[in-house]
Image (cartoon, rainbow, N blue to C red; front, top):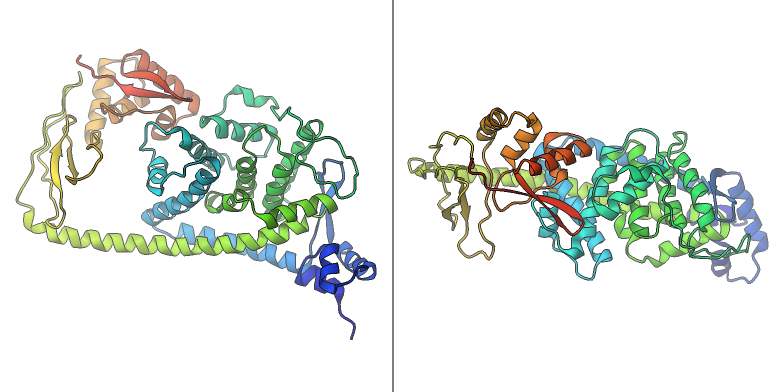
Amino acid sequence: MPENYEVKFSEETYSTKEQVMDAMNLANVDFIWNQVLAYRKKKTATFDLHTIDNTKLSLVFTNSITNRIITLERKLNKVFYEYNALSVGSKKVFSKKRLVKILGQVSSFSSSSTVSDSFIEALIDKSISTIPTDAIIVDDYYNAIKYIEMHDAGPTSFQEFNSIYYVLNSGEEPDDSVQQKQYRTNELDTPHYFSKGYVYTAALTERIDQMMDDLAAFINDGSQFASVRFITALFYSYYVMPYELFREHFSSLMFKLALSKAGFGVSASFINIETLMMNEDRKLKEASDNVQKTCDLTYFFDYVLGYLFSEIDDIFDDLALAQKEVVINENLQTDEDADSLSDQNESVPVEEPENLGIPSPVTSTTPSILSPNKAAVSQSFGSGIQIYGKQDVALPIFPTGLNGEDIEKIAVDLRETYPTLSKSQAHFYASHCTIGRSYTIQEFKSSELTSYETARTSMDYLATMGFFEKTKIRNKFVYKPIPRRR
């Protein structure tokens, strides 16, 4: 019985002509290759995405590729349901676990020195006021991920591409400049129109505008599988390289954007596509080059789908670990609470807060309890909040802020003393007035649930009123509380 070559080289593997020659150990495989091409032609879908030479790209929906696409989307739905079934605590643990992996990869690719996991966790928690130069791109990339999370609705456009690139460059919310196209003007290659087998370095500048419009329309095309849209966006944005910098970063974010727009916003934040794009993967480059030589996206899909299945298995492992870690921590906490019951009659008084020019809250007499098996000592800080820390740590004991009840009282007093303050301004200052700390516009936006512009004008007004000292650290403005005596 003759061998079914079209299935062997399209379904079992998706081979190039050269790979067929190697597999068959023949110098001429035209007869076999023509059978393969005839089989693929019946399953080919052509997209309104054009190459640099203005030829349309296509994808061959072989049985194998189609089944893998459907399976991938089922797995993405399962990730969504399993994530939503987690407790609030487990969600936080899982989210941080995934982001540490993603941002750790960004760090190792983008700078000569890789930041630690503990640093990344502190960055995610927004508990760092000054970020080292080597880690700024990590923070900016994280802000870009958060931007995509908050803009997963509505159609994609060049303004959204500009906005994501703006955040990636600055870490800040985009300004009005993103309303104009700002694509790369530096030419990286020369025209080789319809040269057989030529692999471009990046799109010609004269083609970028139209090609990115094509990509926006493709991401918006709800008739396509979600997987087809976000894997294609990954390839196409890297192929075009629309901006001067951050090629791998931007293409990874385009993957996340297309995934988010397709309704998989949770997975967009947690799939570590960065490891694939930022590791100089030789096989990935070969697959990308084959797309350029043949205008057939299937070579890229075949390789990336394999990576994504492995990545989603890793996500399921982290989902299970997050749930387990929270249960273990809760059990440990229960044990500690039981151990501490014998000490409940011993209370540690809380000092009076330093006078900041506003009425002092009522002194708290709530007992503070230390577990007997903790090697810790109590230390007081000027804020009046009791701090606990080990004696042998190298870091100082950092100040903390006021508690929730005191914040609300102080916010009311502030508005009565300074009637021009808005509720959000008074509340933010009351909850962010710790001497020695620095705060940002983004923190105001997140804390008070406002737009970025409202947050910026509010922080500037508080600085004008003398509540904060406004300074610039590298590319960001920070606001330091000024001690107030009246």
